Length: 555
Image (tube, rainbow, N blue to C red; front, side, top):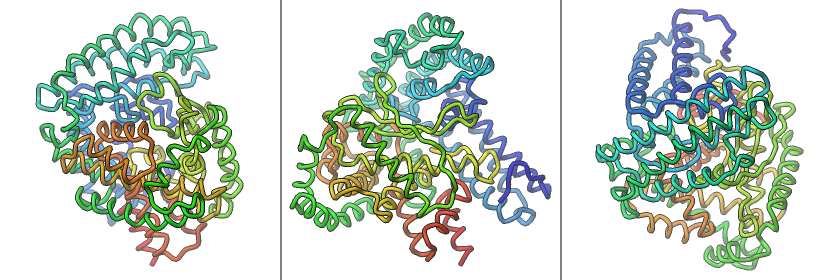
């Protein structure tokens, strides 16, 4: 496999790697907060530019890279370089589509990874200060945040004027996050987390209090000004904004890395929901003596004995599941020692808009480990029947195992730091890991197996609901009702999930699409688990079409 240190053997090879580096620098300069979440520090001094002009400039750059990739003489490339070129082509297409359609700008929210506002509260606390250079990067980023907040206020008004207003529910979520941030005292302000215990705390506090907080207040007023013209709950889909249908079609391709249409994915979701009925009956019968989903769902949602007893209990139970998975990993992988993964809670402004659980990669410089984050507020009202499945998805054998191994993979530098950029592979792997855990007999009992089914149903329902709202025009209420009838999610989870899909059109499609392709390839390949996983993980994150090609070339 090609590596960043391998000399280019041909002009085409050299050009490929120049284009890879150019894409990498453009993408991470445009969205530097995501770079921080990927464990990189080289873009930590940047705060990004959410203006329309910056997006248009980036789209032009990405279009140029695509043109040059199309002109490359592939006969001069090695087999591994052809894989690199195919992966890069899909990455650049995704970046070009994001910059061109800018669906995020017509989908204001506080959602993690997609909301430019939300990313501030997610990425800044993830920064680390280990030396003077790190302190300078942190301060420079803080000083750049007010301009980002001002640009977001301008961008929101521009989008509304162009017939691209955000949904009311997303604006309200964004306002909630700002309110929580402004209420935080100095000791709990997440933007100051990297500076605590450092020599720059006083300077950072001054920037936050005198510049960032006033800018947040102005952004909040800008959000409030947009509420009157916002899309109501009957029109939450992106299809109801100018250019939304075209943008969503592009997002479907970008988030699944397939050629499947929104309708095909909608139908796949309906099929997967139907296929789960037999398993609900089988495992629900053993666990509770219940065989129909409504009865099983009511038990899982309402039984107080199935909830966590405290935030500490939530963390402890997930830690026990992680330890079990780490001990069993050698039965399916030959990756050597797995780097440590910590489990931490999130609350306050950090948790506003965040998923129930998510993973953050270790820093490349070793200054922080990989972290499985849990929203622990309201733990005593949170069902714990899916604690093991969540852990297997986010940690081992899921995201932590896959993404930390990617950082060491023998692929070019610009291919090592990939997460949401190839979400069907990354999230497909996480969902696949939940199923793999069953194959490895890691679930402690049938209640936890029901948790696995619950998360499988949730991801299948995402196919139905995301396409339902954004392509078929479903209302928010109809989306919530479908989730209520076909998953075991609580009312709070259902509301949070649907708001997430509203704010990030297409992203929810990658999970089940990727998992189904991994299961298909595993069965078709006839390989044992270790060899199959070596092939899947050893080539780094890939578009699903490129991954399938690897197995076709083996046969």
